[in-house]
Amino acid sequence: MTGAVRRIGSNGPWEEAFGYSRAVELPNGLVLVSGCTSVVNGHIAAGGPYDQAMTAFGVALDALKELGLGAEHVVRTRMYITHARDVDEVGRAHKELFGGVRPAASMLIVDGFVDPNLVVEVEVEAYRDREDRDDRGGDGA
Image (cartoon, rainbow, N blue to C red):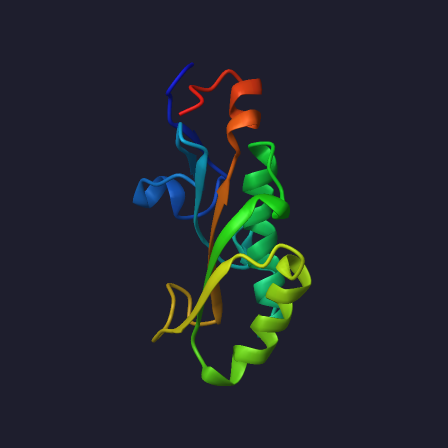
C-alpha cells in the first residue's frame, strides 16, 4: 500500500481502553512509538529505575522489531521519570541500549504515572531510510 500509515498494537492494558496504537509508521519513514512502561502482561515486570527503563525500552524495541527496525534506527528518545535521583540509573540503561546510536534524547521529571509503582516511561522515534522504504514498496517520499 503506497503512502499508507501503518499501525501496530502490543495488547497493552491501555491501548484498547484509551484508543491508541503502540507504534505508527508514516509513509515518510518516521516511526513513532507510544509511551512504554515496564508493564508486561498486565504486571510491572521490573522494580527499580534501571530495570524499569530497560523493560520499557524493551517494549518499545519490540514494537520496532515488529516493523522490521531495531535500535540502530532510533533517532529520538524521551524518558519520563518521577524522581531526580533516578537520572543516573535511567541514563545508564539508555546508554547501554543506544550509546552506539546516540539519538536525540530528553529526560523529564514528572509528577507520576497511571500506576504509582511505575517510575519510568519512555517514548521512541525511529526512521526507516528511503532505500528501505523503496524495498518495502513505500512511496519513497
